[in-house]
Length: 238
Ligand SMILES: Cc1cc2nc3c(=O)[nH]c(=O)nc-3n(C[C@H](O)[C@H](O)[C@H](O)COP(=O)(O)OP(=O)(O)OC[C@H]3O[C@@H](n4cnc5c(N)ncnc54)[C@H](O)[C@@H]3O)c2cc1C
Image 1 (cartoon, rainbow, N blue to C red):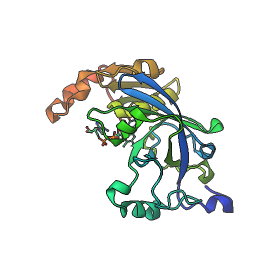
Image 2 (image 1 turned 180 degrees about the vertical axis):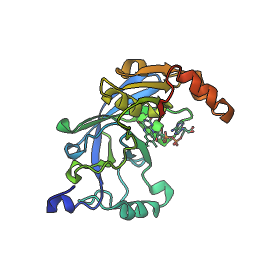
Image 3 (image 1 turned 180 degrees about the horizontal axis):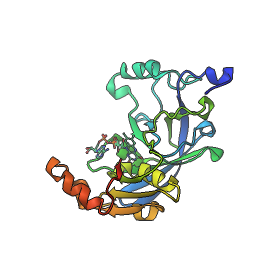
Image 4 (image 1 turned 45 degrees about the horizontal axis):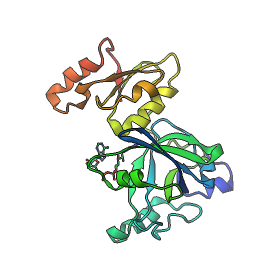
């Protein structure tokens, strides 16, 4: 809980962090890691797991439209989001949701792993061509607000085994979760068959790349669950 007037002065659990692209690294043909840096990221709350953030991408010519996002302290979304929505579509910055792959407040840095969709959307296209020094804004939890847990869905029960099922875009979240599991916990992750970085990333979990994880028909659900949870009755699925 915030316990100083300074903390109470922040009207919302998320703040806006102006950042610039500091580094880019291809992790695989379809995954690109961008490192974002900015002084204010020293206040970013490093909760990890499936922490949700928003990227406010630069306008095509660069920059941020004036919808009040960078006021200090960051206004409540009912203010800035309403102003953003009132702008003509081609004058609005694109907003997309991502998961920090790593958070280093002491260095003022965040890594984000982008799955490069095909066909591309605005965020995949921007990431693929982003240049070092390009500026954008990240909205995310602010350590000055204390713990709020806002934007985290992973709230595991105390005991049990876990089955983590993910498409490509959730690999950063699954990897964070698997890496944070205590040694006594067990997890199994079902990843898309085209993607196998989980073998490298998920040190404490078992990775089962399974074509069954792609099937969407309701009739295939039982078979899918059996095929990715052999010997794991009672697994909690996330
Ligand atoms: C809580 C949360 C966390 C996320 N974390 C990450 C992350 O760390 N890394 C990451 O790459 N993505 C993540 N995503 C998904 C991310 O929001 C989408 O990848 C993003 O919308 C792509 O934007 P775009 O402009 O490139 O594509 P869009 O304009 O949104 O869509 C373009 C193309 O991509 C396809 N597409 C878009 N989103 C998805 C999806 N989720 N699954 C499959 N196909 C999709 C569309 O069908 C279309 O073909 C996360 C989403 C949520 C809700």
